[in-house]
Length: 372
Image (cartoon, rainbow, N blue to C red; front, side, top):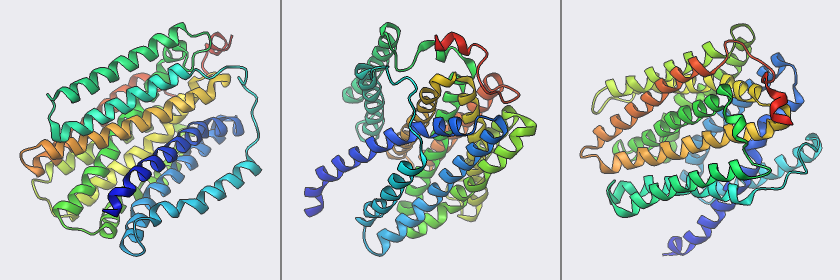
C-alpha cells in the first residue's frame, strides 16, 4: 500500500531525472568535438566516451542488483546524488562556456512535438503487451505519434530558426549515422531487457545474479569503443561500423539458434558478441555524425545522434516486453525479440555501407551552405 502511494512521486522523480539527462547527454559529443579538433585525437576521445558509457552499462545492473539485494531499492536512486554533485563540480571547473548560436530562440513547439511523438510511440508499444495490437488505444497512440512527428517536420520547414534544419538531414552521413545509432540501441537494449526478464522470471535468478549474468554482454562494451577509436585512424569508420553490426547480428542470431530453453553457458558468447559489436560500431557512427555537421551545428548533431539512440533504446525495450507478453509461448516470444534485434543490426550494417564515409572527415564539404 505504501509503495502504491509512492508511485506518483516516483514517476515525477523519474521524469525530472529524464529531463536532466536530456539536457546533459546530447551536448557530450559537441564538447568533445570542440575540445579535440584533430580527427585522430577526436576518434580517441569518442572511443573513451563510448568506453565510459560501457562502464556505466556494466556497473548499472551489477550495482543495482547489489543495492536491491542488500540495502533496498531506494538506494538505486540515492546513489546518484553524490555522482550528480561530482559531475556538477567537474562541469563548473572543466567545461568552458560556449557562445555559439546563443541568439537562436528555443523552438518550444518543435521540442514538444518530438517529446509527444516519442512518448506516444513508446506508450503504444508498452500498452500493446496487454491490450493487443488492434486495441483502439494502441492504434490511437501510434496514429498520434505519427501526427506529432509530422507536425515536427512541418514546423521545421516553416520555422525561422529550426531546431533541426532539414538541410542537415539531407547529409547522407549525418542522417544515416543517426538511424544506425537508433538501430543498434534498439537491438542491444532490447536484448538486455528481454534477457533480464528471462533470467529473473523464467530461470528464477535474483536481481544480483541477473546483473552478473548480463555482465558478459555489457563488459565487452568497456574496451570495444577504445579499440575501434584506435583502429579508425588506419581503417576509417565504415569497416568498423559494418563489422560491429554484423558481429552483433550474429550474436543475437546465435541466441535464436540456441533453442527453446538454452542453458546459460550457451548464451554467453552471443551476449558478448552483441555487446562488443554494438560498442565497436558506436565510435565510428558517432564520428560519422559529428564529422558531417558544420561546426556551428555540432550541438544539434550531437543531440540528434543521442536522441535517436535513446529512441532506439525505448522502442527496443517496449517492443521486447510486448512480444514476451503477447506470445503464446514465452520462449517463442524471446526468440522473436532476438530475431528482430538481429534484423535491426543487419539493417544497420547495410545502411553503414552506403552512409558511412570510407575515411573519417572533419566537416562536411557543404558546411558553408548550412552555416549561412
